[in-house]
Amino acid sequence: MTAESKSAPPGGFDDQRIEVIIGTLLRTGVLVSAAVVLVGGALYLLHYGHNLPNYKTFHSEPERLKSPGEIVRGTVAMDPRAIIQLGLLLLIATPVARVLFSAIAFAIERDSMYVVITLIVLGILLYSLFGSS
Amino acid sequence: MNVLEFTGLVALGSLLAGLLGALTGLGGGVVVVPMLALLFHVDIRYAIGASLVSVIATSSGAAAAYVREGFSNIRIGMFLETATTIGAIVGAVIALHVRTSAIAIVFGVVLLYSAYLSSRHREEHGPGLQSSALALKLRLDGSYPTPEGKQPYAVTGVPAGYGLMFSAGVLSGLLGIGSGAVKVLAMDQAMKIPFKVSTTTSNFMIGVTAAASAGLYLARGYIAPGITMPVMLGVLTGSMIGAKLLVRAKVNVLRYLFAAVIVALGIEMIFNGATGRI
Image (cartoon, rainbow over all chains, first blue to last red; front, side, top):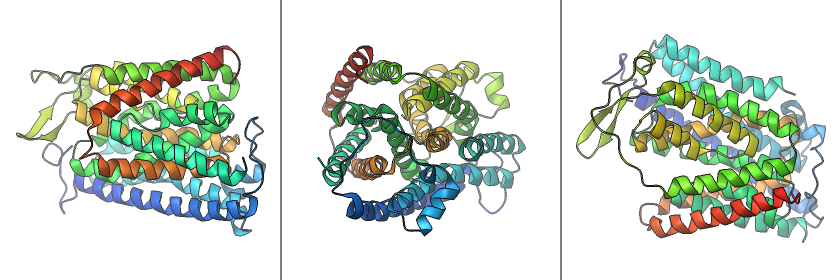
């Protein structure tokens, strides 16, 4: 996908350049979320390192580790497991952010068909994150 | 084995999975679930949740590098994501309602099929190809860099590719994998998109597809912080090291070795599912 074949708006904003910027943002998002998970993980091992792991049978995670709002609350309370979940939540948010940025990029290019397509994808993602709980 | 030892071993195994996945291009996600389920006796639902999250990490982490090369086609990716994300939600809903032994058997079959796909000889599509009317209307055709300069390519088979992408999404949501193999199949085989464009566009789609089912998994309590933490950090580190080594490594031997591991894991998953052990 290059500017030659599509309409390139003034200012040198073409698909390629926008995507490189988005890619760099994504990478940063992943590294930040990994750092949060690492901090939560270190605290978790300090607190629970000598317990016995119990994952043989499935018993759904407690409510406080399942919804974005509860996870933030747990993080404020310095619950190690909530901090890990916060990092994972940030990670899940990175592709959502990329879709959002792509919608903006298509809007800058005045490509209305792809703005609509991108917003459909964004809607599906937001439904999954917030509509299902 | 206490939590500390468990975490260390899972992180080490995940690092290896991420490393081999990046070096061979087969993705680390496919071996994480069998590793957790067969080796560490983790309930397959926790394994799927952890794997799905690690898939997002590798896809988003590699996005910058792939885009810079100029191969991935954002319009193709975004258009097909309407199919993969809906498929992913359908897959995650199915996963909530079927027995874990059934999931294990499907997983085994997908592992065997991925190994088969990776061993197959592939051919580049001829230059005389014409884009279909639908592909032109959606502006899916593009060009990509080759040693001889920019090479334009045509796109056809949109409905078939779209259907396959929906299936790829269902498998991703059901099994917690990126299903890159099926995505590449849809683009390379059904839509006649050049292989390099297919693989890089697939990588960028994987994270968005996985995010669609990750929300549901989180809400249903499949994402356990204690397991997901070492898996996500391990796979991410492994795939980053793998991407750095890729230029120098001899991947062919490794590919066959990894394919053999995948076949063995596939058979074991099917056996364990059929005998009700998972």
